[in-house]
Length: 235
Image 1 (cartoon, helix red, strand yellow):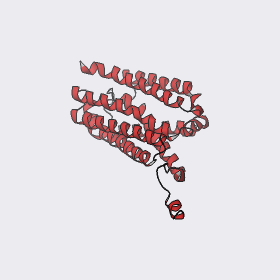
Image 2 (cartoon, one colour):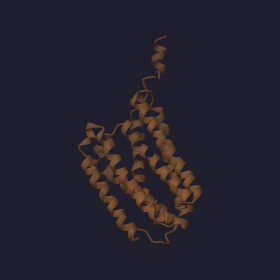
Image 3 (tube, rainbow, N blue to C red):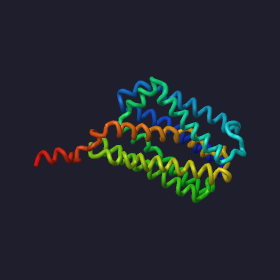
Image 4 (cartoon, rainbow, N blue to C red):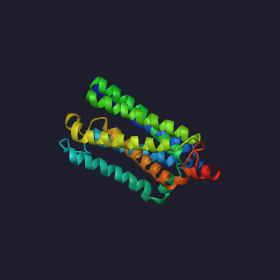
């Protein structure tokens, strides 16, 4: 019976992801105008996922772990090509500041909580649900802390750590899902709604955040951090 409610729960999370994404974009005047287009695009993609997963036409039921892993990587690459290959969209995503990029990850707390519940109810294997749930909650929490610290001008080091942890979380989950869990839950499990919509967006938010941190290395020192050169000059 719990399996019946797993799909509506994941669809509700994806809908929340769409709304949250639009809200994060609206916090910056340079990205606010694109909110409607982004919302329509994400809703359209979610509708496609509902169609292919409900008819089980996206992936063969007997797909191998390696083929599934490659498919997921191709999906992430396709999202990256869209975000960075289309000039108008590239301008939009590069206009995001570090506060938005960190805040964007915060919703992973809700996904992690649902995975914990699904592990407890048997919708997911208990061990995977526990580990995946806690790691997603941790990634979202660390990103929210980093967003606050960056906004307060305290330090950008927290953003580096949040990005590293968040990317490692996604990599470990994707690898475990493909090579350990897939044979037990199959390629059409409700969890795939998280794999093919929010996960690629989280990956590229991390990548763009790291790119911007690297590009602005001299400026990533927070207000409370002292420049060693300046300190030496003042002595």
